[in-house]
Amino acid sequence: MILDGKCPTGPIQQSWDKHRQEMKLVNPANKRKFKILMVGTGLAGGAGAATLGELGYNVEAFCYQDSARRAHSIAAQGGINAAKNYPNDGDSIYRLFYDTVKGGDFRAREADVWRLAQVSNNIIDQCVAQGVPFARDYAGYLDNRSFGGAQVSRTFYARGQTGQQLLLGAYSALARQAKAGSVKIHARREMLDLVVVDGVARGITCRNLITGEIESHWGDAVVLATGGYVNVFYLSTNAMGCSVTAAWKAAKKGAYFANPCYTQIHPTCIPQSGEHQSKLTLMSESLRNDGRIWVPKKEGEKRHPNEIPEEERDYYLERKYPSFGNLAPRDIASRAAKEACDDKRGIGPGGRGVYLDYAASIKRLGENTIRERYGNLFEMYEKITDENAYKEPMRIYPAPHYSMGGLWVDYNCMSNVPGLFVLGEANFSVHGANRLGASALMQGLADGYFVIPYTIAHYLAQITPGKIKDDHPAFKESKAAVENETKKLLSINGKKTPAELHRELGKIMWNNVGMARSEQSLKEALKQIPELREQFWKNLKVAGSGAEFNQQLENAGRLADFLEFAELFAKDALHRDESCGGHFRVEHQTEDGEAMRDDENFCYAAAWEFKGADKEPELHKEPLKFENVHLAVRSYK
Ligand SMILES: Cc1cc2nc3c(=O)[nH]c(=O)nc-3n(C[C@H](O)[C@H](O)[C@H](O)COP(=O)(O)OP(=O)(O)OC[C@H]3O[C@@H](n4cnc5c(N)ncnc54)[C@H](O)[C@@H]3O)c2cc1C
Image (cartoon, rainbow, N blue to C red; front, top):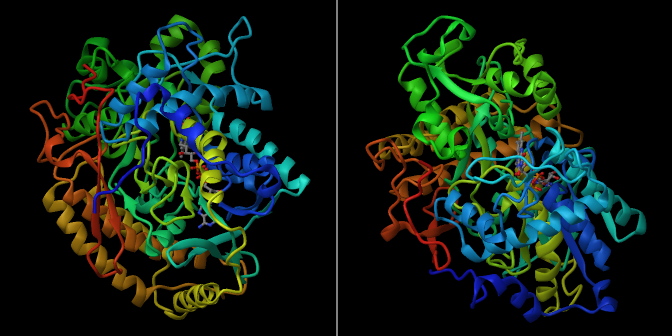
């Protein structure tokens, strides 16, 4: 099937404004008749729930953490982009739009990216009004720094804690609505099924993670803002609880999953130190503003980095990409680090690391300035590695970080299942095959504060409120299915814990579907994943019961979904016989190792329809058109 993103027609500059004028509205007295379920309270869901509550809808918000403000968005460090052009360095909405389309290697929808760039400026105003403590310059204006893939400074930040401060802003707005009674927050609930009646999303089934009770919740619309799936690699920069579960359950009920193979491997993370690890730590991309990345020129160099003279160092990003240097986009910087390590010039234990060096900027700006800009990140690095990065270079290596793929949505952020909307990292819409730094926070808040309030009204205005409630048999069926799956997980009584099996899945994914992929490695993954899935259902060990707080049971359920999803991920990577952004097929590269797209055959979003765990999914395509940015070979040289 050819999918239609339903983008507005006409000049792109007016597309969102025109669309807003044309959408239907719900009058204030009618808004309170509708109930909206918001699954997720991160930046996308928290902003969305607060705004919809403020507008007068009845909102119920769900998260699996003990508090809405512990959503994973809190981990974001470096900043959020907006086209304010405060530094007067040539930025504009068009330039942010252009950088994002190019950064995504021409695999995103133009209209969605334009809207994102346009509302980016509203986000900053909104957050400042909420009291988010963005960094300011000496005159008191909001300060900016640079992120990858841009030649302007457009990133607003609050030290290395931007996500936390933005989430506190959204959470304050949410808490205000909770007090006013327009939003009811259900913490410690995990959505384990989507309830669909006659093809329309009507509610969700959740497990109360404290009591184990399985609950039904009905709504006139369901919004998923449930974050990304990069923990399919087991080791990643994401919080341990991040999972594909909500999105995958929706996919199993008919929502198409788009571009699952587009994942981001972030170049700036602390290298893995051993097999014991269950998490990797990000060192924000903002550090590349002042840090210089290098490896020794000589293979197998053993000297301390401070003893290696300048002429024996290879500042490979500055050498290969002189226009963007250390701020080359993430996919490119990650591959370059891998290439240097594959050449046996990597540093640290196992030779899987490169240096990120501050000596030059400390000399130029002084240690205090560097401390003011990145102090908490340097402290974090020291706590983990016991090394002082003011005195010697940091060691970094790429790690799984972000998922550009997600549930397919149209321009209104609605999936192909009517009544099911998807926001933030959980949808596929704006980043294409590679996300530029500081644009995930921008997307989450754009979707939550400025897109969903309009587009959901257009849908609600056309339906009758409360038509189907949780007494409908579909809710009972869904509840029974969730209870059965929980029992099944508890009854296997095998020998391997979810963590052990998850680590095995992570290795299969990293080795075969990671930074570099080939037909051979993908076929290998497609052989190993179903075998591991079989082992999981035969040999899983979950301690405790379902009637209590049981994190092993939670992890087992999430892993069951990852084990199905991983196969789709590898299938998507195999079918996309080109390289683009973070999807690097070794068969398709230029002589100097750059990704080679195939626009003739693959200029589309791939949206997969689930047909059963052991059946072939069906591919639907949404062709991508580039009318405002010339479809060209991406170059940062
Ligand atoms: C270490 C780190 C640093 C980052 N730094 C930056 C940065 O500087 N700038 C930038 O732009 N981006 C950054 N990112 C990316 C960015 O933080 C995320 O993409 C973004 O915050 C995701 O927001 P979200 O609202 O979509 O999802 P999340 O914040 O992940 O929220 C997901 C929500 O869904 C809920 N949920 C999930 N599944 C279920 C379920 N089954 N049932 C019920 N609830 C569920 C969770 O409880 C949570 O409330 C960073 C990411 C990481 C990991």
